[in-house]
Image (cartoon, rainbow over all chains, first blue to last red; front, side, top):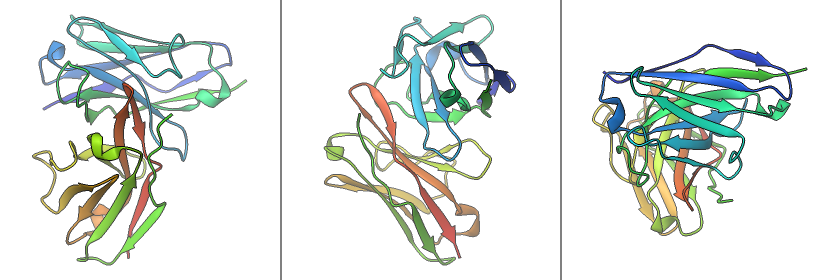
Length: 123
Length: 106
């Protein structure tokens, strides 16, 4: 059974960085890409970026280009997302979600999702 | 930025059919996915590539598209289907979600 387990909640001050982990199990890690999606309270989900777990290629929403980093550790079957220069508007639940279509950035769909990591940015 | 538009809420009686729509420019040229999100839980994929259903999703969930509108249909709606539903599509290599429709089963 495919399972994604994320790291715990974080509280950060404006200007700081946060790094969230996503441990994958139940499938061949390098055969499926991983996306990061965030959801602010009461808002729609927002796609942030993606990593090809086979070759390390990444793509980001223009909104997060330069501020978000996604890396993978194939030996640990874990993907990490780091967001820098945090502002209060970054307060949200951050999800990792597997690309069920594989590692190509094409016809992508999100299945399954991790349990989410609440990041609170407050002074 | 690409915009997907959904009605904020839909109500349905148990056993009836619920239809949730999603509209966007040139949506006919894109694949649409649908996600169910129950309160306090992570989203779950219920429809992808407009009409396909994951193997673990009940048959009462179906998807269709006509022109620039995609529709999620839930036949024989049950109380457990009460949730927020989000459509999602890709535009210029960026993923976009609709604003969500809250389905209430009265």
